[in-house]
Length: 434
Image (cartoon, rainbow, N blue to C red; front, side, top):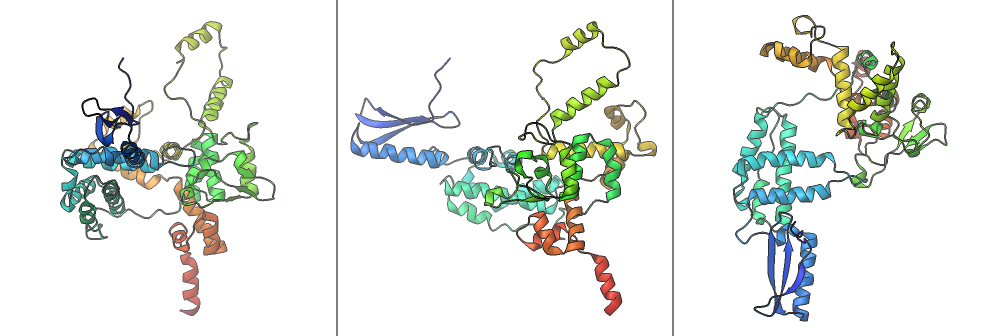
């Protein structure tokens, strides 16, 4: 097995010239050599070597760029290494921004990966944007992902991988405007009706129901509800104060406090464990409860031979074990599946008894599949709508400022996106003075 290469530069003697040289390996496993000024072990060479170490520590991609210039692929790879380290939460885990960056880089690589990065101009960016439009993404999503492409090349300029003129040219590309592009505008997120949520709750397990009810009572974000732990809650007062260790605006240095009233307190007490650091809503405990419930409903005894057979079949080290807590995507998936069970398509679109999802989907025609998608769009809801519902209720009963505080927004104009105005109040005013 070959000796692993060192990414830290080594200070070595160059035998032919008697000068010092630096040797290191970059993140792409490419070996680099650089002759340093002055004789070996001279103050001049030592100063140059120290300067090289600082440059590699701050901008490794810029120091190791080829003399002929970088390709787009090399810029993307270097930026992905930077994004993996830069976009992390307080616990050190990558944020969702890394996933979005990878999506953008994949499309840029497919179109212009082998081209010189210095030649990536406005026309290339518009071509990438057109590719985004063809994916049927909404206008705001397209604009946000085009901005991520610009951010890649802005970072490359700062690392001296491409000339500054590249980013300056890309900045001239304006975003898509409403009504002047084939990219559709997504409908604003609206509050979800309580009756719809109540119809879905029986089709969710106890822990997902707890997540839904906790959001309905507090208006917190889905990620904040998934992370709630007893050790993060101040229970000293009549109203508990939940301060999540990780939240959306923590990277800006802002704090977040969620007020937990009596109803939400009674809900959380049902999920308390002996360990205060346990996440209250846990897929692992949900699976344990499901298995215990199945065992309790057994009508036939568990014979020793049956137990031994199950032990032989059980996977010793499964690739995917239930997690200690839900994340936003798992929470959304659970709610989506609950909506599928609560509001199944009817008539010819319905699944037959005992029919698998694959056979049911294969039986439908293309037109029927589109009808099912429309049905789901009309009958599904997602967890963030619970936050909109809570904000709208607080604004209606206590005013915009109260909704701003409850939702944790720094500006009231952001709160207005989440808390819809009370049109009934405007109608009442118009009836009286209009």
